[in-house]
Image (cartoon, rainbow, N blue to C red; front, side, top):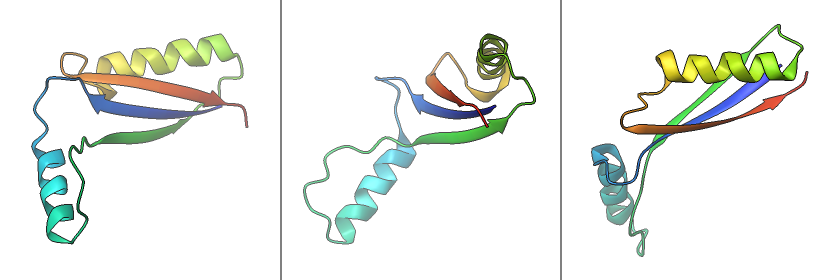
Length: 81
């Protein structure tokens, strides 16, 4: 199975990288950009075939290592291969 994991900062958490991207876009002539939030995208391939076990494993990986759950949200999709 393949997991596609999206990690983003929670609302209310300052995002200096998003602010820098927004500013750079403005300098490049992209007017009308009001807010940019950046995040992380991670793909993990698992040998696990059982969807529930794969879900539980990815959820544990996110909670223990991949996401800082104090300031970040995460979501993921599983795809059979």
